[in-house]
Image (cartoon, rainbow, N blue to C red):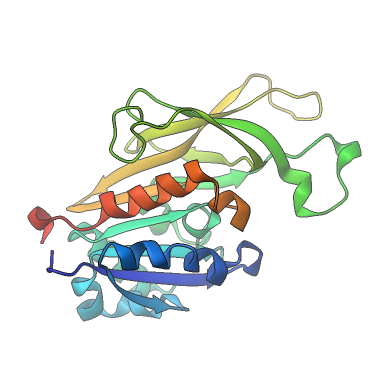
Length: 237
C-alpha cells in the first residue's frame, strides 16, 4: 500500500438511494483517516488499469444500472490484485443485475425486501419498512469490523439475499413467516459479510436504504470499520 491510501468512490444508479448524499456522509471519515479521495459519477474509471492499480479502496454506491464489460473486468482485476471493495445496501448488493460476474465477485444478490401487510401499504417506499434485528454471528463478535457491537434493531428495508458459501457472515437477519407471504418457515439472510477475492478484501453491509439508516451508529460503525479493514494491506501491494 502507498504511504497515503487512495480511495475511489464510485456512485450513481437509482436516485432513490441518494448516492451523492449517501457517499458524502463518509467522505469526512476517509479524510480524517488520511485517504486521498477520488469521486467518480460513473463506472468508466473501472476500465482505467493505471488508476485502478493505484487504488487501495473502492467504495461503490451504484444501485441497479449497467456496467460495461471492460469496466467490470477492470474492477474484478483490481480487487483480485489487492484493492479493497465495499459498499452498502443496493449500492453493492443490487448493482448491475445483468452481470453474473459482479454477482460472483461480491457473493450475494438482493432478491427482495418483504412488505407490510397489504392493507397497510400505500404504494410508497415505506411499504417495505419493517422492524427487524441484525444479529451478530459468532464470527462477527470477534471480527474487527463488528467486535464490541451488540445485536441491534432497525426499521427499514430488510434485505432478502441470495448468496454462496464463500462469504464470511458477520451478521444475519431473519425474515419471519407472516400470513400474507408465501414462504413457510423463517428465512435467515446475511446482513453483513466479508469475502476474500484473490489478494483483495470485500465487505458488504445490507442496511443503508436511506440517510437516517446510514447515520444509525451501528450501521455507520460497520461501514466505516469495513472501509478500513478492506483497504489494501502491505502484503497485498
